Image 1 (cartoon, rainbow, N blue to C red):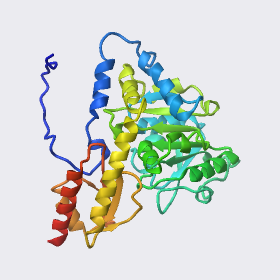
Image 2: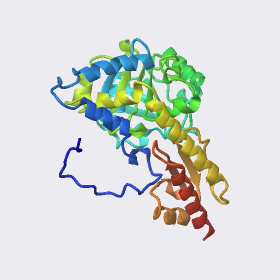
Image 3: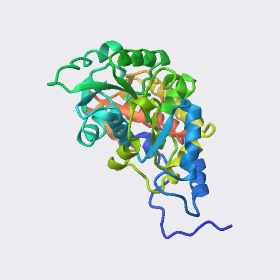
Image 4: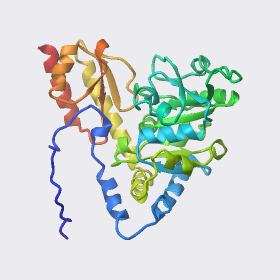
Length: 356
């Protein structure tokens, strides 16, 4: 059978690789096959299709019998919808200063969601009960936004991980103060792969109330989901998703991608590979004199400090971002399709530029 014809043309070089973001990667072939499988015929719009119904079964297998998935377009949308669902108009969210919702979402939680973010500096991107207490006060003070949610990220923006016991301690502490716990899981698969535990081990099993489930960074074309674990913690999720502009009309094409990832082990295979490539990269970088790795490499990202001029020259050969340009800190991310050859070529280029 001949492949379908298209008037579109390839406008990029598929041989060009980089370490800027796992969002730079394409979609996994198994995900693309799933999209073709879901195509054809008519399915009810706005989430009443067969694929979204089946996704609920898969989500419950990962996150427990009470879990319900609400597919959305992107990670920022997932976070904004999830946080709105567990706050009142006067509510606030406690998060790490480095949290994606604080530094990388264009102010969307505050501007679109109407939330106040109460941030806490952390050395490694991780909150603790003691750090939470720096902002967890003033519930009866009408002059202060009321802390109602603690939001954590797994894996964190600095590539570090919470243990299940650490998340359990946060959940118990938050719940004791009447607060809910949201987990930003844009890279939840990488965390589970690194910890070598099911995702439930550090979500529903330890008290997380609601989470943002990532797909795009782990091989999907696009699409994430808000997963509600504690049904009593939320209300009117369908309305919230719609008014937040995250309701897909042809939702089957979001849901089937998540099915392709989560029905068996594609999510885990992809995440393990990305993590392994980050470990290979870190090992190579540690052998380069003058380059310092700043945080434990526990997922698929490496944070390093090196001379600014070296970074600028290296960026002409491989795409990657400064994390803190003034301090000379860069971030290198690996993806499901990063190869050993990609890593080795990058390390060789780094050695060349450092030697100049």
